[in-house]
Length: 140
Length: 140
Length: 140
Length: 140
Image 1 (cartoon, each protein chain N blue to C red):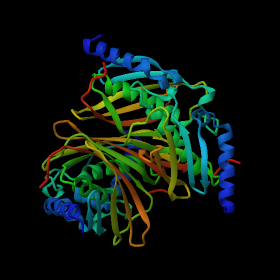
Image 2 (cartoon, rainbow over the protein chains, first blue to last red):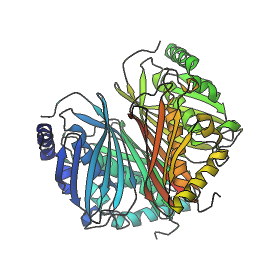
Image 3 (cartoon, helix red, strand yellow):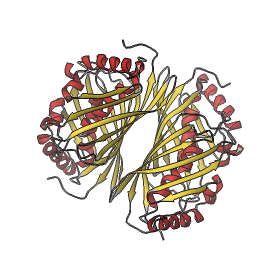
Image 4 (cartoon, rainbow over the protein chains, first blue to last red):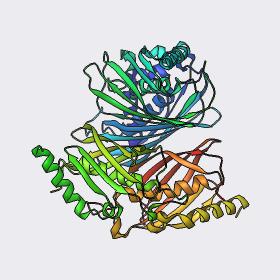
């Protein structure tokens, strides 16, 4: 593992420690590298909406955590400006969702990330796009 | 209250009954009318991210519920296709968030809604835009 | 007219002078105020797509000009980061389109604007949302 | 070349014939396959904005054409619902822009496409995401 990726992992572990909502979601960190994050969670009964499928906020929240872990892990505190998500397949209780965040642009003041969410059958259930603003502050 | 608004309210109450994630968020329904919804919740400690402020997924989830309540309440089952959210102000534990969903377009097959989220000081903290697809099925 | 709005108008007139694509579109400036712009154009034959209706790029371009005129007119050079547009009604040759840009958020480093495009029958044909980054440089 | 890709190409050629705005842009079709399109154009002086760089509407329009060519080429007439574009690098007069549209989701009623635009130095200048509604009508 490259040194910068080890450091990226350390930054994310620091974030995750106090990220109580990601903890509630049951997020596991699978892989971290500079500008990259891969995380996973399982959908529980208490996460469904009025139609008995996972609330849109669940997939969004998972993607948003992956986005945060990817865009902050160079230790440059970054805040979400504009994010969008497309839902392409319903998500059910028990489904295991994996979110993978890939950096598209790493600018001095802003960044752009694409996050795909797949289920346990490797079907893509949502596509997320996130633009962040880099504050220049450090996290750790 | 107009008859169609009373019916809209009935549809939303039916949705809310089994919407376990909206229940977890602590959402209260303030006002429902055809193509319109106004709902509220208070941010709790377990909703924060690694920076000690509300996770982006919380504001999104509230807006997404308002969107669902507004776009489904003519009893035409509608699913979210594409949604986006802009974050303009940080949200803290204890903040009371109000989401108001207004219909911009009510097409036969699709709909468009804008949702604004304000805090207890009437500051706008997020802007949400949602496009839905109408299935033609009924909810109640 | 307030002094700051007069200045805003001067900045936009300066932008428009060298904005050759807005000139090609035939854009007329109807009203400018701080953080606000209202502009108009007429759709011509050469602006249609393969279906004989206005190309999506025409409505987008009009909205994007309104966005630029609104977000730059405090003389703080701002660049578009993320923009989205929803199309709610087809636009035809001869239609007169009016774009109105309203500021939703005027932050130190970023801004958020909503632009609606209406036709000559006052029907909304598109909704545009734009996030900009403020460079801190001046235009005039 | 597969038969369905040949047919896809035929559909796009039919669209392009009457697409006067894509013609004005100077779009060349490089490659077409089912749900896929790769097209190119060169930025001209008359396409700049008030800052002397390419107007945001130019990159959007190129991406939107690529989107239309990709999402319609199964001969199922599809209309854009929601599109968004992120600008990551300025575009100048003389730049040669290539847009590549890749299908992310091909649903019965809707589709999702990602389009990247690169310049002649293979730098990505914009990322576009498009959601379309399928009407079920044919084009040719």
